[in-house]
Image (tube, rainbow, N blue to C red):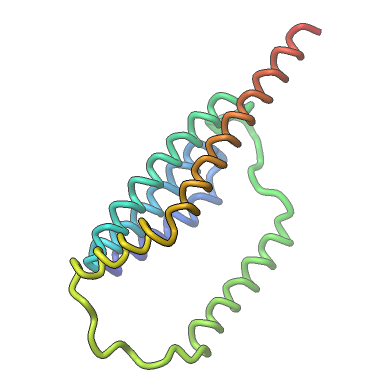
Length: 165
C-alpha cells in the first residue's frame, strides 16, 4: 500500500512539472489510479474500482478536449504551464502545514472496536448511495453533462464566428 501512496504522490508532482497538458492529464490519471489501488489494497473494492473508472473516463474526456481546443496540448513549444509561481508555492506550503496540523493535532477519537466485513460495508455504502444520495448524484451528473454540452457549443460557435470574419 505504501508503494501506491508513493506512486500517487510522485505522479501528482509530475502533473505540475510537465509542460504538456496531455502528459499532465495522464500523470493525474496515474496518480488517481494509484489512490484507487490503495482502496483495493484496503479491501474497499467498490471505492477502488469506482475511483479508477471515474478518473479514467474523466481524464480521457479532458485529454480529448485539450487536444481539440488548446494551442499546444503536446507541450512541444516553449509554453510555461505555471502561473503566479510565488503565490502558488506559498499556498502549497501553507496548505501542507495546515493539513499536517489537522492530521497530527486533531482529536480523532478512539478506533472502532468492531468493523463490519467488506461485504457489509459495500452493502451499507450501496444503500446510502441509492437511497439518500441518489437525487444529489443524478442532479450533479445532469448538470455536468449540460455544462459540457454548453461549453462545447460556445467554443464551436466562437470558432465559426472567428472563421467568417
